[in-house]
Length: 345
Image 1 (cartoon, helix red, strand yellow):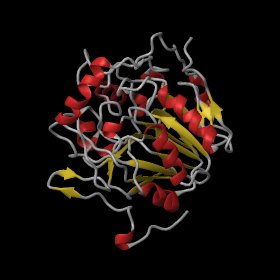
Image 2 (cartoon, rainbow, N blue to C red):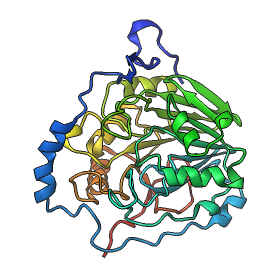
Image 3 (cartoon, rainbow, N blue to C red):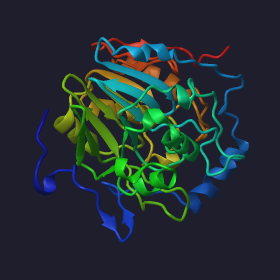
């Protein structure tokens, strides 16, 4: 693992603000009403299968597996989208938990889940850390947070998030004393695993009127035996190479592949950008695709992110780790996992 470069040469620095608004690590145009007007005709006349024509699942997690620690030391249960339960070197982390029916400020409209969560919140094993990368509705659902905050199994959990998001968590019932907010390059150590917030190229806000007022981050989980990168949401930027040089190599690199479009390629990678980012981050270990397969958040067919990534993996020799939703799966020494659960007949 490298050393952080000092001075103005590094891209890995604390977040900057202009007034109340955080700014991206590189100049980034975020679409507003003009983008909505541009994309509206495409939505109206789009013929892609953005939502599965047939029901998906049900997917079910065998929760009995959590009674024993993973033999490899690293096990991940992907719940769909960017939500997952990770066990790393003795630490259990729930990342961007999303059990809400819709990724929306309302319960009656907005992107609806393609399949039910593989387990009920009440079935979750006790976790050490709940991590929330940023405040967007597909990563932070009010019903989910309120439900978790009420669980006895979560009473001892630490909540780790980006600057400014803690107030929202507290408003949804999380004890303020359990919340740690991190700026970029700041870290917290829990149970021998260091959790480091690193820059990403995205934005925040739960309406058009509070964008950028809380921070968005990617995260590194550095344990005694394993090193994992969780990319959360990000567009391409040159900082991936420095993140890999300073914090890598990674055993598992989680990168978003869905919700992409040319109109907003500065804030979402898509499969092509994810493959490029994986290589920039060092191209070691396994790549896990996240942020796909659960919500209709763009114009592309719902399968397109994974089918395109499979093509890229073959072309570039990328080893993929893409399990079935809800299946607790160990990460073993670069061994690929490629479930075809999405091939609905």
